[in-house]
Image (cartoon, rainbow, N blue to C red; front, side, top):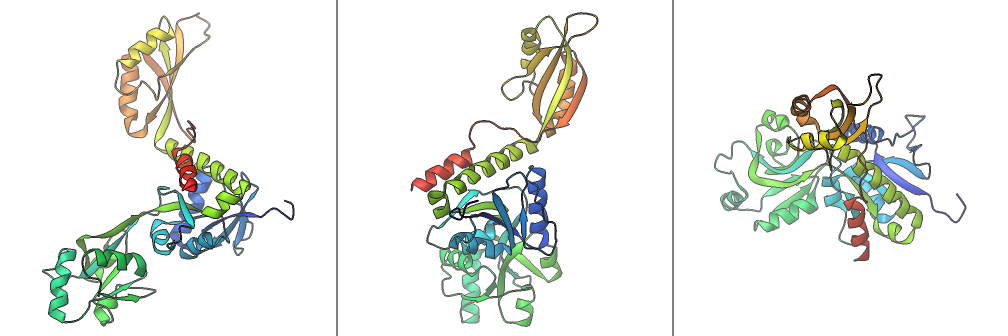
Length: 334
């Protein structure tokens, strides 16, 4: 790297479950993060030597990408929605990486028996004779959501740490918080409103808009990241299936397979001759199927003369340029 070249950086979560899942996801996608010292806040990705890795809190990742101190980041969609700002300086390159799932919900005390939906909060507001107090770590998206239901006078209390205790100790009437299983809510006699889901969240890949527009290296890294990630995600739910097939020709075997529901493959099976001591008449068929179709695929292969079926995982499925990459190019033109 020359002195004129800017280091391209990606920020990953530094602690907690999202950090562990991010590292596992990248490792499974062939982008292993090498961190020789667990106390360091920097690392590398050997497959992408030009890309430096730093570790930050999920919320700080969004701010860092927005400000341009890092070019890319993996964080939660909840944090992205809360801290992205209004300047349009950040882009979501991939909104669903498939891990870190949770929802951001409006949560009320269980004793509010008559309160089931957001509209019911107006009645509570009238009964208490003052604006409702709402404790949340997500004041921006909470404010917008409450305004949509005519509750713009609600008093937002920005809080850190454990929120579930807020209604009990009395510094808030209700809370807005992330929910995964709901167990903690039940233990604290709280529940979500039926229409109180502000957003559904999972891990996402984000980027700095100016970096992509002005730095060719960053653009190249964005394309490579999306190529790997999209190909990996496309392959995650699929299996590679090989079977020995007896027949007169590849065309005859393919036609028999096309009569079945599952074993036609993505565009069609790949069929090639097998060289045997006994002579011709055997072929190898290769196809890609969804994991939940495996038992049906094996049954269908047997019905058309398949045997010796071998099943292996699929790491990547590369097709044409990822739609996410094309969406990124279109967004940069606006």
